[in-house]
Length: 295
Image (cartoon, rainbow, N blue to C red):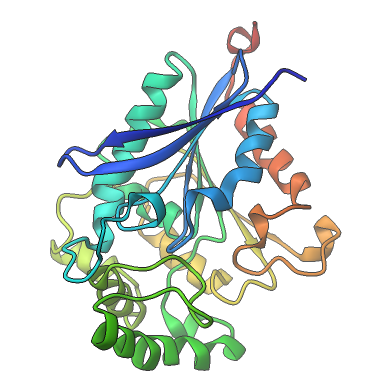
């Protein structure tokens, strides 16, 4: 096995905001893979899947959205960072950074949760050959599993407002185990999660212009898991509706399919899920030509 190197980098979005990323690759990759995270998950959370892809011939970029992890400012109190900024500014910049680091290679994308939902904000989305969605669905709370609904409503209307009042942002803790969240990210996320079509209404009304959701035609394969309380089939359909011209395929799996007791919303990128990662890699490989495979 060729040695894998990991290089921490900084790069700038179009508005000048500096983002943190990590490039992981072997000496002769045949493809490039961008990994976009779910809300509040830092880039290190995706280290295992990124290294797996690198060990199997990919140059991989993981990164932190603005306001998250290593891309956070000194304070989030009063921060102007909003949820769509991640798709409109950060994801395109990450893609351009990956293309520059791995020139002339076919580019693929793994989007976890909101990291998949936001592809239609990217002006350079057409540079991605395929999107592998992992646990991607809307946040509309009635589409969650019933057992999950009380806790998510408490998060929206109890925990969250209390943290905004006390800290000016959502602070990491026992209930919210993700990274600190900027206040506008939380407020926009909550508003969408109270709306049946998530951000679909904002797309139609023009509130989210400019966007490119109707222009996305690259294939999407969306992996869902039966014990995920958030990205349920109903929630997945809502995201699918925002991408009317993409070839969109849904794959519903159970933990038993991978010999695991639980997957949930975040377990697909944890240790032991290598069979899933292999499925994703093989699907990407279908788009890599024989010439691209030649050393």
